[in-house]
Image (cartoon, rainbow, N blue to C red):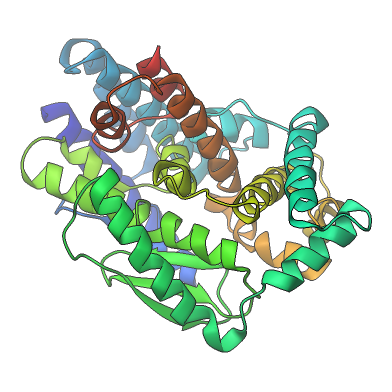
Length: 387
């Protein structure tokens, strides 16, 4: 517990030092390194990045003796490595995109190949065939299907409210019962995201600049609320308050070792709720994963291959079955230095949690949920926990 408190205080200190160098008041700048903390953490006072590195090095020396479990040893090692790398970036170190993925997000993924993309296309093709969308090529059939299931603009928020209520009932029974805690759907525009869980304000901010299919709203109800970010943060808040989770569990820290599992749990929400019920859901899930993978590839093209965001969007929009302007907007996050590798957290996190759920299908369900929600994990430590 002591080393967890120290890690939390160091992380809060890094966030405060990082914020002092930021200019502007846009949405992503205001988030800083820690957009959400569900407990009070006193920032460690740092004058410069050398002090940060020294503090992290001292903490790392303590990990073998003070980590409470093997699980905690892996987590503390990966998270402190991640923070040290980010701190060097903030201090002005030139870093390759591959290094940032490996050290900060803690994933080895670079370009996602056609062997994986083709599995999503095959699942999508089969589901569309089952629904009767089999008269054109795949791109034409995807377009016709999405047109047919698009939710009218005036019905988007009411539909999301209804789906969130169903997700809440399932989540309280199958995941964790967090009572009547709720996030209100609020429409916004001109923001660099399609949806955002404002946990402190208990709002689900939905970008009304997009068109949404029913599957996309169903997925967002699970991802942002039940059993995704709302449930995950409420669970961590309760555990930290009760002294059952170390203080580092109170922080959401952007583009770090913690990011893939934060997003991966949310992206597997429908699976955990037993809510993949129809060919429409299967098609939507395959299309979501295809687009997530191709957004990773667009980031790689931009930061590893030197292409402009316009060029990367043009190269991946067609294979994503999206318009170029839509793809460009979905890449808006990567224009912010801290967020450059963050889109990998979605695909890599989804993949890690999916593999964990498959590997633990014979476990007691309560143990599976406890491992996912009650411990801080990276993709590596989560898969090790399933071994």
